[in-house]
Length: 578
Image (cartoon, rainbow, N blue to C red; front, side, top):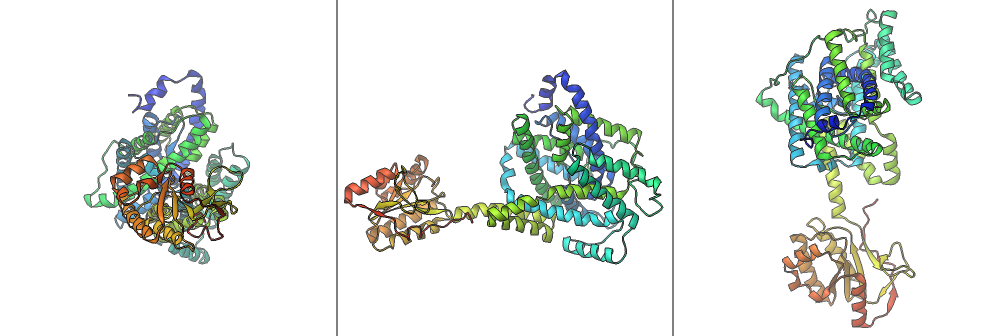
């Protein structure tokens, strides 16, 4: 039972000395959960109160079913634009907030279903579909989208534009046209500056809480409401009932498409965050259990007018720094938020809306990874281009198409490495045992009439032609080699397309007086060779356990001496590491 309900295991192993730390951490965490929950709800195009409902239920759901001791789930800045991009096109023209909430709640339930099914099917590896470079580009694009989208709210005006480019133009026109509310802009810009300064120079001080308290105090002091600054107002009192969201069947298909993207981003974010904090605390990360925990958290939120959630690295870090030991920290946070909306719903009525925009903008800036982008530029230009393409996908196509672009680019990058793998010749270098890449050892030698070729990939349909052309170039040398020994240790598979290619290539080489020899072929691959009946064409005597044994056999048969590898030896190779 504890395998499926990790919360029970945590209760059984709970130590009394942890209680005080968990309670204090829960109080500290709540000061961050409330303003961020409201801010991220509005980022998703939903009423601020739904962010609090979501925070409460996801914390409780994950506390029971989540495997991590201190991971904190909740509304997330990276999911907000994805939620908005999914539900806002489906909301009626009048912008009915009730329908928006219903759609967001159903979206959370669909995310939960995807996560739970994937957990049962042990599909945790799906998080690896997005490579780090493409994720960096996606998050950079997302950060840019969020910042631009929040600028009007930060400056006290609104725009009607669709897409990042149109929004940038609308914001520029609004600023140049005098639509900026000076008081709102002052509050918002000061909020951004204060949060960034406190986070940079005084990281132990809860920057968001300090800014929220100061902003609330500034409203009556400077009469900001009279100056046109929008305020959060009194939140609805009470707690939503357990309910199934009322949405039409026609809404399910677009919601499901959005849920797939949200589930993928949420899973990737959770696995990376869980891994980082598990490394600090000596815990292990269980991807499939994490999916189940995230799924239950989303299900709980969706049944109580909430929206999809993910792991928050910043809130988890706050909880850890405050001394959190278990998920009791999150439970304390959920209880305190519940007490607030039941007893004191007007606590944040004087919170300026530009401050919520400031919270979102600073969170978005933390998503951007400028250093990582610069590192990609310096270390590997191809992956920098992948990152830039993912950024442009988000910026030009939108948030949801952007995640699709990121996934497709990651998969294509894997395919590119399989299609054009690293290839080289090997030779024997003085003072170094074995046979090595002649690019690294240009003075290496080989027996006259023999070429040792290494192909660093499984032989499949995508690269069969690449392999064939490389071997043909080796066979076309003058003088032509008698043997072409393939150092086949990196060849982890041979599919039927590649098998047919090998059969035809061997016949072609035999007609030229050159023999194809395979060395260091793995046993599972050799069994496939036998199953394909390739040994009817490939001489069974041309399979050797090691490159050395193949070279020794050639030397015994021919008596040829050793010669330096020619300057053109690396001709068939191609490097995909650029």
